[in-house]
Length: 367
Image 1 (cartoon, rainbow, N blue to C red):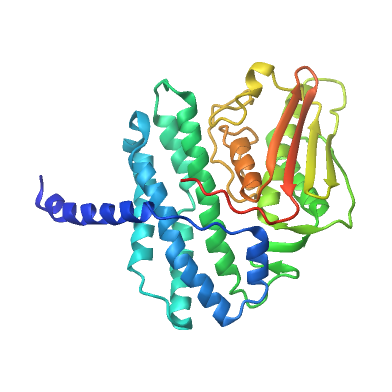
Image 2: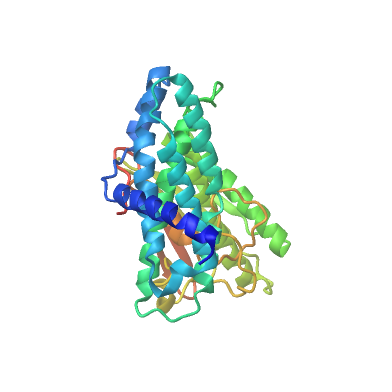
C-alpha cells in the first residue's frame, strides 16, 4: 500500500463511520402545501428556520443513498460511474456535516451558497448512473433488484433537489408572479401542456423533418398549485413518446399522421392529464416492462442519450434509453400522484398522468 493510501485510509474510515451513523437517522418528509405555506412569507426568520432544517435533513438523506451506493449487488458499486456518483454524495455529506451550526443570517447566506454548489455537483447523477448500469453486462438473478434500487435512488434525488431548489429560490428578490420558490400557486396545466408539446414537436421536427399535430382539450381558466418544471418534464416526455410512435408508424405512409390528443380534467382530488396517440400501441408482452430502466419501445437504440432531468427539450434524441417513463412516474408520485399507461397493440396508447390536487401528500421517503 502506498504512503498516500495509508494516509487517506483512516479519513475514509472515519467518514464512512459518520455516514453510517447518519444513514440510520429518521428522515422528515414535507408536503407541497407545507412548502407553499411556509415559503409564502420568506422572512429572515423563516429562511433561518429553513436552513437549519436542511442542515439536519440533507445529511440524513444523502447518507442513506451513499451507503446504498456502497453495497449494490452484482458488482455495480465497483463500476467507475457509480464510484464517481458515490464520491459526489460523500463530498456533499462532508460539506454539509463540516458546516457549523447556523445561528444568524450571515450563516444562512453562506449555507445557501454551499447547498447551491451541492445541487450543481449532482447535476449529472442520472446519466452517470445510467452509464454504470449499462456497463454492468450480466444477467440479473432478480431483474427487479436494480430497478427497485434506481426507483429509491432517483426518488430520493428528486426530494433532495426539490428541498435545495425551494430554499434557494425563496431568496429570489423578484420572484415570478404567483410563485413561491419552485411552486407556482396558480399553474395552468393547459399552458404547461402547450409549452411542453411545442418543445416536443420541435424535437420531432429536428429528428424527422415533420411532426404530428397536438390537440389540447380542457378549461383554459383552470389553475392549481404545482411545480411547473416537474409538470413540464412529465408532459414533455409523454408527448415526445407519442410523437415518435406516430411519426415512425406513418413515416412511409400516404395517410396524414393522426394528431396526439391531450385531455386535462380537474377533479376534486386529482388533476388528470391524458395523452393519447394512434401510434400502433405497445405489445402486451412489453407493457409490463415500460417502467423498467433501460427498456424502450424505440426501434433504433444505437445512440444512448442522457435521460431528461430538467423538463427542457434541449438537443436530446427522440428515442431514449428507457429512463423517461420510470423517472416520469417518480416525479408524479413525489407529490402523491401517479402515471398509468394503457395500450391497444395495433392502434395506440393512452397515458394517464394523475396529479394530487390537494397538495397535502407527504414526500415518499425511500429508506
